[in-house]
Amino acid sequence: MATSIKQEISSIDIPATVTIKKENNVVTVKGKLGTVTKDLTKMTAIVDLEDNKIVIKPYGKRKKDLAINNTIKSIIESMIAGVDKGFTYKLKIVYAHFPISVKTKGKDVYVENYFGERSARLSRIIGDDTRVNIDGEDVIVQGPNLEHVSQTAANIERSTKLKHKDQRVFLDGVYVYSKE
Image (cartoon, rainbow, N blue to C red; front, side, top):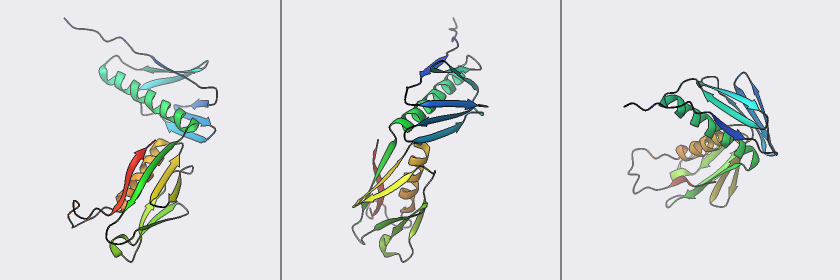
């Protein structure tokens, strides 16, 4: 006996503090912290704006179509949360051998004196609205776009990757410890 999966239609309520525009499956969410744009043309679903809701209709009725439906829903919900509340990643500067210093210049983050290296290690800040602040031993990455904030934090963490040494012994680096 086969069970049939009905077509799921998801809807997201739009808060009063947020405005959403959709042109050619490109969704733009604007709020008090900035603007986030996402291109959904490769997704196999129809995204429509109706009254005060976003309606997501998948093309088919298979599990894969329902999974894409939920993916689009979570992407748009994170966009709304980002322009309303923002995202914050906190990284900790950890060192035992040489004191590490982190500095920002424009769209770059420099990790200096990592294991006594003369040249600084470079990381890119992704996105125009992403901000990086250094507060003592903490590096705080903030912004409205979750993808840009998390990728910037990952770039900083990855710039202090240790090669050719035992990573269990040499724990120096910059590590993510909080995601909000």
